Length: 120
Image 1 (cartoon, rainbow, N blue to C red):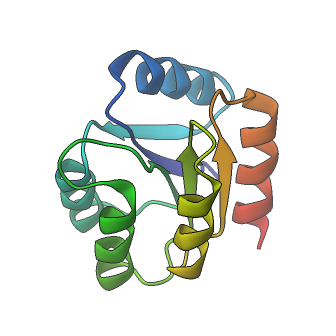
Image 2: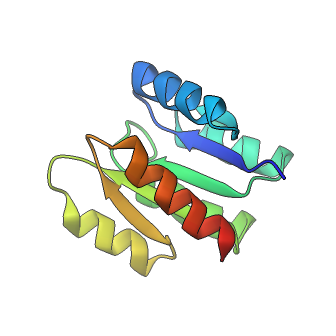
């Protein structure tokens, strides 16, 4: 069974590269450059997990997460945080994210986390 992953991140090069790396490993990925687009995709299609950047212009990751919880309360969300923003990662977990990972991201760490989330 293919795992459907939605990547929401405003960094075009990062999200494109990450999507390619996940696709190569058998995941079906969709991407969004901002929270609004990500929410629209969640309304249109079923995903197994969302990988969500915290720091985005416009609607940030925490606001996007709050909306995801209303649209799809059981959809697992893994947060990506950079610049030592552990506080925001912890706040995201309080809001219902399953975990957070620090950027720069080791693909193996993400793969381990995806497998863990999908298995639960």
